[in-house]
Length: 188
Image (tube, rainbow, N blue to C red; front, side, top):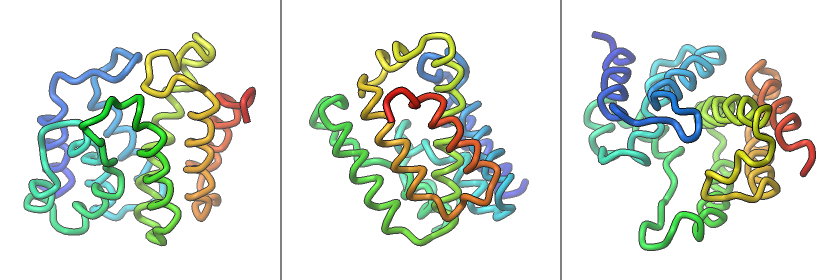
């Protein structure tokens, strides 16, 4: 079995039974979409594996050390780049801004194109989901998130877009930019 197939199996097991917020779809569809988007930009196996595994440490009981042991240092490094510090001693709604500021700072300081590909792929998958929900619910869609203010959500997704603008020649970046404007056009 290839490293990518092992990563797919690991992600399937790690996210078993999980559902996506609001969409009521199996969570695993998100990592597979992220990997598909990443594959439109690169064929690097470590990036594609990290795309499948990007939420495992953040959203399950699995650790970065497990990822490193199973898939190597580079995949673990890429997954770590997308793993937020959760500040578990505080409610998520109170730490949202700090977590996002920390993430954006790291992303801006990172000159690693592979990290940018991973982030763009993940956030494009999110924006596709948001666009579908926004079409049906408007800004009410944010009522189910820790951060309910669409202007703050817009700030974050625009900051990501700007931080990964080195990928602006890709169809994925252009789609992301379009969806950010479509979803947040009334607040940016």
